[in-house]
Length: 153
Image (cartoon, rainbow, N blue to C red; front, side, top):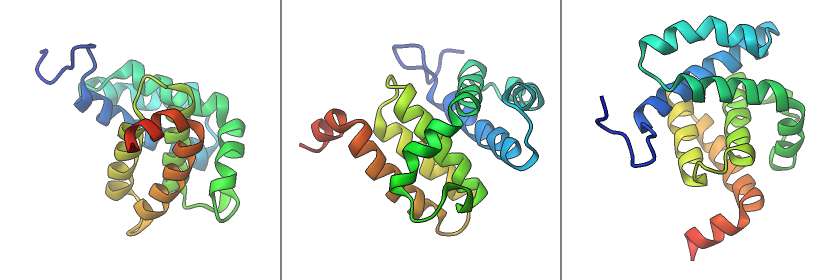
């Protein structure tokens, strides 16, 4: 089942599914206080049945769980309110995207932002994607300045 895989072996469709499940897992972590290990266990079974990238899903959830305080602090300058006051779906997606931008430099910034916007459009509030886009655009411009400048010019 190699259809859709890139040369580097990454299946973009499976990664998209992984991000969606990661959003649900991080959201659950935020609401219930469950740790990453338990959130992964709750969602891993569904991941396997969706033919998603289970390893990537686990990395995202573990990464947000491990680096949450760092990610929140890094995001704060780009937010117009405390991170805990951001809509829970948007907050979960911002944390996942921030993790990818800061710790998964193998994923292009445009892919991170595009995937975040698509996911928030699907699961978030009506205009949530606009807010997430503004935050991530500014964050990427600072955290991945060289990559963003190269893409723009």
